[in-house]
Image 1 (cartoon, rainbow, N blue to C red):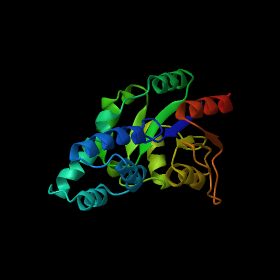
Image 2 (cartoon, rainbow, N blue to C red):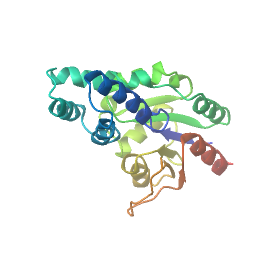
Image 3 (cartoon, rainbow, N blue to C red):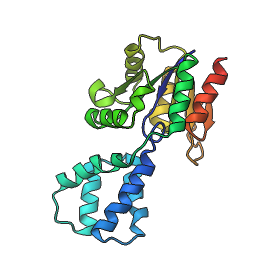
Length: 216
């Protein structure tokens, strides 16, 4: 059974859902209109916007007197407090591990924050290991970070699967290495004509099931 290299945000953990919950509370606290939730979600861009840039956008829009560094800290620490590991995801990982799959988290981001999220939610109990870009010194989609993940569990990269919701970071990375991949569509259509995922599914549970079926 293969090595499975799995993304963290909006794959194993519902980063978008947690950010939405935090954003709603934050906007209520500063007295912003409820309709501004859509604006904040849009400028966050699924976490792709720099936290410093997002902090500046928020300060400018609401003319807040707080220092940018305080908003950056809030953006780093606030949303993860709403994150929980879906028990069904934990169950799927347990079944996959029992069947011989070796799940390893491969994620971009700050090491301290990603470590904390993985451990606090209990995800660490269900994966063989994890690699974080800040600590690795290289980010997805660079093949080196996936190779480092394979080395962490003393497995060959050849034959591994890559699972994630990012067309560029996850599926693009898999394509660069010639590896099969599973894309979590999250209601989106695949539009990149440079490469394509091996399988398209709605969530990580379906993704794990697809890999187990293909490995039989």
